[in-house]
Image (tube, rainbow, N blue to C red):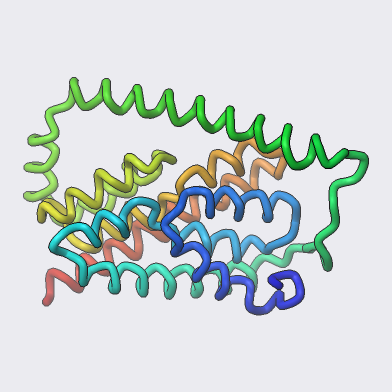
Length: 236
């Protein structure tokens, strides 16, 4: 559907990315690597991803913020998705074709199994490091620092969100629910986080410059949008 309607790709991508599942960003990375979607569509999906944030907010007393979060991410994803496609012209396939010289066994079982195992090992290592870090770092001091440094919040949550793991989205969402950070800071952390999508992208053979462009673009967009929203919140 996307290949046949190239002009709607970033719009559909921003809607698709809202689905609270880290596999969405992995699928998006895979489609981009195979040249089925544009860079703008990939950016739109990454920006609209929220991973664990939506179910956590729905289970809290901040349910209304889910609407603001989803709308913000869809709009930001769509705007920057179309902007990237306007600036960067990429050739994508006109039709989806099966990989050549590969049996269905290798294509549909062995490759996904290998990718899943690699991702499993990565998630395991990251979770072990996270738990070790929480035993060393005093989270109360971090929360106190954030509460007294309002405009630095989006910067710190962007750094947390860069960690490609659902734990980072859980951290920033819980800090927002606990009134430690602003909505703008929450938005920064969630805009830059794309689940395991970036890991899948960086382990591919795509151009290193293009991958770095995507990464730094996410960081800059997250910081700018977060600071703007935080500034508006402060005025209100």
